[in-house]
Image 1 (cartoon, rainbow, N blue to C red):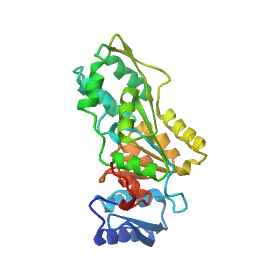
Image 2: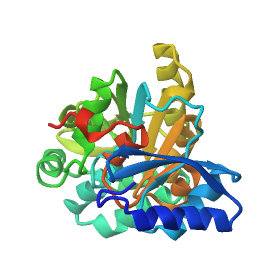
Image 3: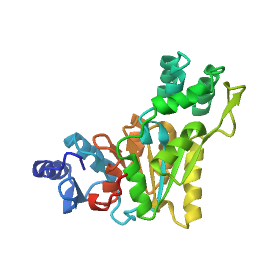
Image 4: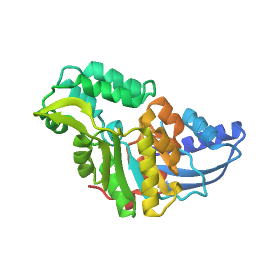
Length: 289
């Protein structure tokens, strides 16, 4: 699927690439005119199909999912930083302390799965001890912006009857406002300690990490009386992998390599509305805000 459309030449290229690898297209149907199509593929495993098509069609976002799995999901669990919003909040906060480059390097390594998440989080928070609390409000006002398609994704899924949960290894001082902006039903994140109008340099435990994200998805499923196959998870970093793997549909968004490899699809070209197309929801049903 692609915001620029899927041409007949690209569809033929997909068929040819699959055939050359021993697969075949048993059926084809449009999801929304030429912007997205479904291919029913046989003769190959899902991972091989996705890898093959992403290589053959570098300008197309590819999502591979079993034909017998529920298509439209009843639960959305989404990461925040670099997923629902385009920023890493702790990096932007660090800019007000003059330490953005240092903190951003740790964030990048943690999101790539090269560092222990909890230890990396505590080290970054400690480095910001003494920063005025006002920097949080300035970060929200001056830096934090929803990614394209975020409001439409959440509004449309809610209109289709889904529950939407924002979960982050970041902080509630950011997830609260972002959840309100995008329309999420619930937000889960870490709590920063503040003292005398400044960051104390500590974060409350237990820390929201990869295990928390997976556990939250499963608990939300239980609360709704659905199985994980009815859930959709979106994220970009290594700490999102357990929830991406637990969900019936795991989508990586502009993701780090390990997260992209763990997902059923990687949105590299389009915006977050690609996740609606992956569920077979055409633009005529989208709720724009």
